[in-house]
Length: 483
Image 1: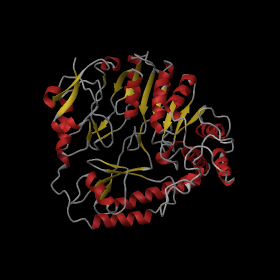
Image 2: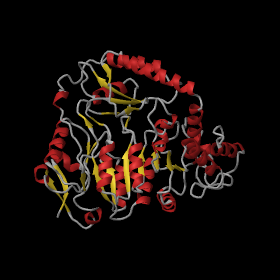
Image 3: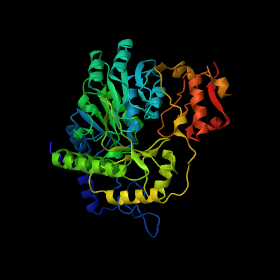
Image 4: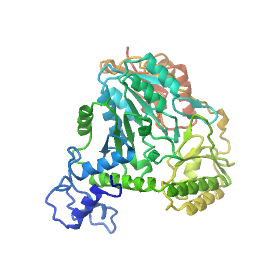
């Protein structure tokens, strides 16, 4: 297929150039009805914020330019079908899980998954079997699940209706999925991969292998995270014969807006075009790699910073992710480093106790030189901070292989109460407890609360970490089920 073609964007642009008169939704009428402010950031985008007009196709019944744009994406990624998502990867995870399993079905799920995966399990009343990721104690970071861990779970639950994996993780660490997928397919078990941060992996070396190339059945990607697409723009790729396409399309129609954003969809068309052009020019990828690696090297040379190295034969890092540790007498935590950088106009993706995470651009037209200058200035001009913080006292927390103590269906019939941390040990959690970032639950709803859970929550509170889990946590309480 001709990857230089942008059917949806081109048609949207041609519609705009007709200078039509709008007697249809949306109410801003091609931008003519809008607050009269001295300066409006919306002025240009409103011109292409259209609806399902003649020639612009329909996301929920695509037969024209949207269908063509989705086919081009499927061709680029080497899959059978690609769907444009305008509700982010969240809706891709929801629709994928709901389409392969029903109430009381067993699914094998990587424990450090996104909360949208947990929401899908609950919506479908699925019985999850959680498999624990590996944990690197020296780096204080989860590193994904080993192939043998997943294979062991498959052998133990050969009747599972699906497997849900997260690859890469938020920090860009990936594992090879090919062996897992092949073993799962021996049992006719479809593999769903939350590849939200890996939409660019199809470029090949030096990037990790994509889940599509590994043979996964359903692959969910946030095009807006690393490709030049608008926020909430994502792809859902499907291949093979293990997915019920009728059910999948029903859930996509049911869960996504019936008034999809044309600017978001057009940006997905353009993001695919951008990626295709980059993929066709190997010299451009080599040049990009050199520039990104040079930027990382220059970061590492800044006094007060250290680019975190990660070396493992089983793990490959995404070139677009860089973890930066503070190495400064006034800055001990990633939180403090993030705050200092923001005061000089440098905004990172996230911070945790140990590091700040940068997501680098998939392209060379970026002000790297200005960034280095500002970061140097930010580190040079700090005068006070957190000199008494001792990171060597920070506890680690490892997930365990587990399943829910009570099913989602049972949870709907049970009453709940708040109890103290001490009284919660041995009870069943009635709401998740999520340190943020990165937003991976320590406890999930329906999980048995252990002494280790409480010890780690208390530890995080002492460090003033941000914990999502209700106001009760600040009062040393957890919500539990009355059983």
